[in-house]
Amino acid sequence: MKKVQFKSNYSQYFFLAPQLLILLIFLYWPIIQTFKDAFTMQDAFGFGSQFAGFDNFLFIFSDPSYFTAFKFTIIYSFVITLITGSIGLLLAVQANKVMHGKSAYKTLLIWPYAIAPAVVGVMANYFFSERYGLLHHLFNNLWGFNWYENVFDAYIYVIIAGSWKQISANFIFFLAGLQAIQKTVIEASIIDCKSNIRRFWTITFPLLMPTTFFLIIINITYAFFDTFGIIDTTTIGAPGSETKTLVYKAYIDGFKGLDLGSAGAQSIMMMIIVLVITIFQFRYIEGKIHYN
Amino acid sequence: MTKYISSTINHFILSIGLLFMIVPIWIIFASSTHSSLFINTNGLQFFLGDNFIENYSRVLFKQSGFFNEITALKMFFNSFVMATGIATLSVVTSLMAAYGLVYFKVKYATVIFWLIFITLLVPLELRIMPSYIVMSKLNLVNTFAGLILPISASAIATFFFRQFYKSIPDELLEAAKLDGTNSLRFFIDFLIPLSKTMIAAVFIFMFVFGYNQYFWPLIMTTSEQYWTVVMGLKTMYGSISDRFAFVIMSMIPPVIIIIFLQKLFIQGIFQNK
Image: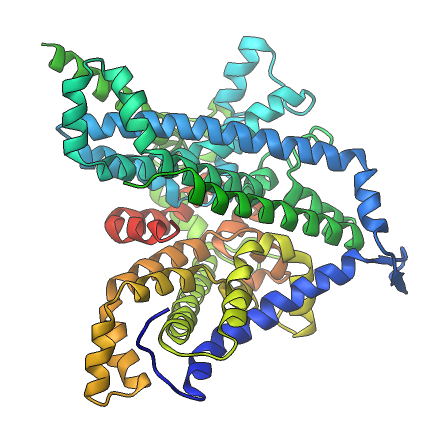
């Protein structure tokens, strides 16, 4: 907050009103509705509903497909974070070193970031289709690829589709992080340590910690929420429910299954997960990371 | 000599990265210039064919959808209206709200602050079904307002602008106050011109974000008249080369924006930090 401010009885509300109004109608109202749904049980024909306490929550915890979705979401976030983070970092380090063509590499590597996940999914769909798919043929020749039946193959499919454009995001942030490291620090470290690789892990990488940590959060958020468009255009959760993310499962149960109680309870569980990640983020940033 | 070798290794790794990013799109593009018959018999193509103009113009103007009620051109129009609406509304409301938070003594300031920023914890994906119910209660299903408003209900931009205002020196307001400037004039004559770059960056970021929406339009548009490009891709009917051409066209607006406004866009995403 500013030390010098306007003192007025009403004009601040004129500035705050539009956003507050939109948030109240289009955000708080649905959220209240979510909580209402989560604690009510509707009968199958939609004629009536009654207060159900934690029944909807008990129901999702006793549902094995909820744990399948939970497990998949965790694996998916972890693998995407690992793959996109390491490839992004590798490319950023190279791009930061080259003398010629730096901006050309930069431009050509960042634009996939602008492509919508659903568009990436539709593209991946062609590469993994039995009829035209180059990757399908390649993997099929290697080990008999069949994502409709084999869980591992379906994982490969959605992981490749999900990682592709996210590499760009990791590249942009790592490159910016590298460029922010002061030249003098690097020059001083060259005198102390001759090995390029050791210098990277002992000097550069620790200085990149804030960027790395930020990207972990970004990648997890991406894998949780933005991959809806990818799942819906590639496997649709197949085989069985093995590649449904938590968001995708809540959508299928709510919209296709018309079970608003379960969908509401699932949404609240995800809000709790987001809250935990956020608290962790603040704690960690305050406690451990040193900005230069 | 070692310098030469290491720089060659750098370029080599970067080139593999480039191929990995560009080849998939090139294959879809090359395939989109062949006839469907050719694709169906020969599979995806690496080299260009000669049906480019034919395929692309057919997709743009042909009626498609389940009821043949929409052309790709109309979907582009819808996407632009939606993206522009989202970007404009977010920028305007967030700019104002951040001003109200930073430059005024507000009663219950803490309450209002939390009321705005706690919403960052609840992305649209988590409230999608109840949002749909609210929209149908308000009769906003199959309208542009329905596509735009819930996505604009976000405090991300407010967060960016608040950070930015806080970095502006207090002396500016002190000087303006000495001149007797009122709060509205200060906002319009001083703050908005100062925030121009920020406004552009946030606008571009929100535009691409709005254009790329898939989940919400999928649920909100039961009438084909309101289909957007990104959601129409999956549902659109058509031959295989029509689909390839449409995939390529759907990427063009956001990709052009990111290539030409790279600096601004990067600034835009960096505000996330």
